[in-house]
Image (cartoon, rainbow, N blue to C red; front, side):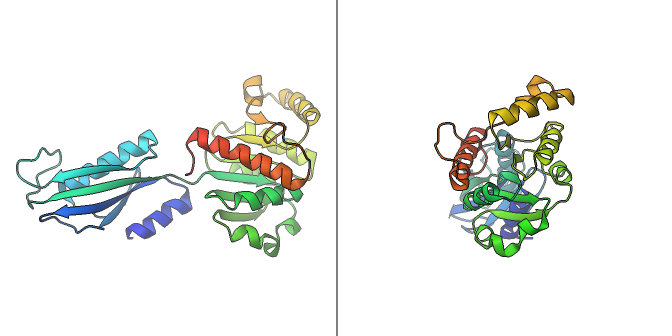
Length: 269
């Protein structure tokens, strides 16, 4: 697999990586400018020349991944017998500059309920580099023709008919951001309960009024969720103070708040 296929693989799986590129060569070197490789926490694809140069670049790339680095870095390697090395000498005689560019994993957002608000929210979020799971227990709400505008955007979109939507929630990757806005309050409640039983999710939002949340909060407490767990659910959702109750208004407010969460978490770009 070459570096381009590797980038696409990592993006599809929601896994971060680092793109390593030879940007300039002075004198002799194993690879020419433009040579690339991709590094993940567990694997590498393609090559920038092997030896100490490549091993050191891989080592630094994985340090960047562990630190969650977002900014690119450059490294310069002198390929001669006098250079300080950690992984064996390369005596080509040249000097190589390498650029390391972190490729952050796209954040995952799951919207449960493709009614008016859910659909408008999907339209907004589809314009951003996210992995978007659109889930509904009603098959008729997920007609691909209805979502033509959504699936043509920047986001990676997955439409999922889930008669038991809590099963779909249980299968989401760690760190996924969940928005619960189904057509049925009973379904919403089950989804909230399921979300709270996963400690590895990102943000969890529930559409509705403070009165709805008060009822849900009491019932969720009776199901054994303590105050710290209940504090993980935001309800009402969106940015406070934005007037209007139209689906588009709510969607814009919720999307803006979610972008704020992404920035705070360092998700996406």
